[in-house]
Length: 62
Image (cartoon, rainbow, N blue to C red; front, side):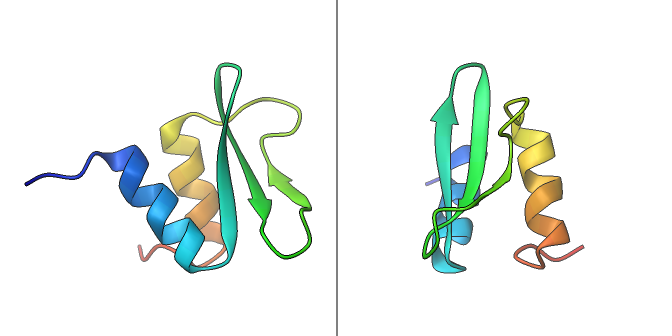
């Protein structure tokens, strides 16, 4: 059974306390507890840029 990359990133983000929401044309990353937008507010993120943002937040390894 394979898990698609979007689901895997969403699960990892959720486990770390972040929310990934689908936006028009991409994704938005926010902090779950505060609701503060972290990335994607001006331009929605692609799946690759979402992975980069999660790396910056130390959710993903190298």
